Image 1 (cartoon, rainbow, N blue to C red):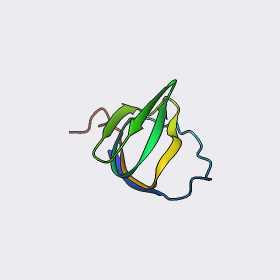
Image 2 (cartoon, rainbow, N blue to C red):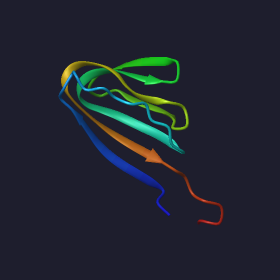
Image 3 (cartoon, one colour):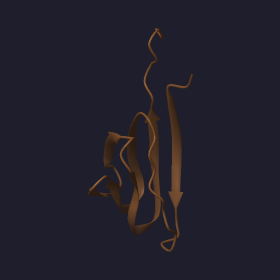
Length: 86
């Protein structure tokens, strides 16, 4: 069983439409380049290089508005250990 999944997300087209995501676990994102508004549930967060955000994955989330392109960020989803894993 995987405990976490790392992703490098790159976006360079402001006309793209982004779906919202829902998944188990906790997600951590860290901005590397660009500026965006990121939605988590009913809240949006302005994220710039160096900013990080941690949130529950089971609440709808995803990029809301791309402000400064190109955008690159790390996204790491942590699923946690299953009972009995040690």
